[in-house]
Length: 119
Image (cartoon, rainbow, N blue to C red; front, side):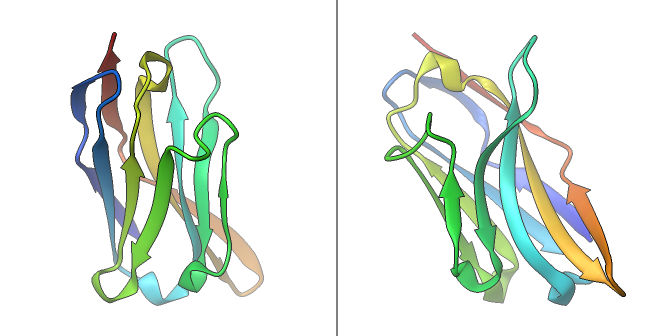
């Protein structure tokens, strides 16, 4: 599975951005996708996660009500709509995809994309 992120950039506080993550390869075996982020000097944290078919979605408390995760299975693409952005949302955002094959769990990571929110 290969993951390619797009949609990052610089935005002013209060603005919006939409990240996309397109998966290729053995996408039929993906059972969950999500986004992590890592700010300078901080640990990587889960921002939002989505199970296959959008059955279950969870968000970090810090982004609830502002970020929305969605998935277009036909396009093998996941989206993260980010509204009311704050300077503390500044980080490198990583797309992840989980799959299980023969009882073994695998996690794939995108290359990361920078989001910078100016105050």
